[in-house]
Image 1 (cartoon, one colour):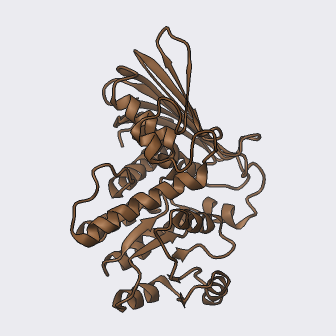
Image 2 (cartoon, rainbow, N blue to C red; image 1 turned 180 degrees about the horizontal axis):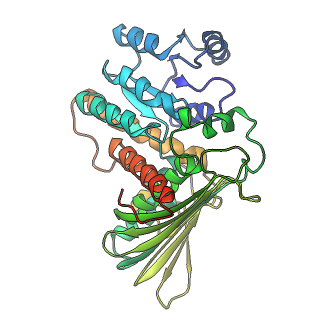
Image 3 (cartoon, rainbow, N blue to C red; image 1 turned 30 degrees about the vertical axis):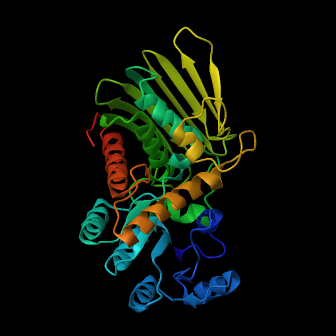
Length: 367
């Protein structure tokens, strides 16, 4: 692992997700940009090998016969590209937190490195790992909603309503570390990726209105985005980190000419399906009417809740299957739904288009 020291929220999440299904063992890390902190975090986790920098780690692990097979990169955005490239060049598979990078220039450098390397690259858009989201994707693809007309998504939080005085908030409002997008890059890309994943649609153009309500902030903490999808569907995306009363309110609503789907991350084991002119139906995780994507991503019988960590773990387990196939020279399993470089590049284009549109008084922009 690169980043993810003992006081980092997302590092702990990645470690739990990686352990859940028993596919990974944490062997080495460069857990902080400060060597002393990196060593202290490694000692706390019982890591056998601690490094003072990711450069040192990539070189040393790449030279070992028993070196790591994969690295999880959980740093602030501006480190993603250089860290990932260092490991890709040594044939080490990369699991990277989103968004892809902090700048389009870095995204292109990383893209070139992924395409030049034999190693795999996965991006952790973890919400795609929920069983009910995978069922929703299958239902849309099967035509249960008919021709799609509306794809609306929102992700609202409230933790930055006041001063950004925590470590987690501090780097997110710094353009040098976060990139051109604030909330739109942090959680807006998650919402956008989820809408694309389930609907199967490609964005045609958008019109965005980004705001920085917090005192002294240069990056957005709230965004309203109008969406026009190829094929004629329309939609809206709202993301905010200054909406009191919202903790992690991620919601997706998709409607076609034959029916609609509604899902909320805060009640993730339920998917509401309404066929046109029929009563609303409650579909559940691993319950009656579950599709293959639902059951394959479920670990326990229906009625026992699964949530955020399990969804995250599904991406790690899917990646493990891809690594096992790669190790044996076999093609990747055909049912893999792991976000890749292309999803990351799409997310970067989405952020850039939102910023460009907002700078032009919400003009329509093609990503």
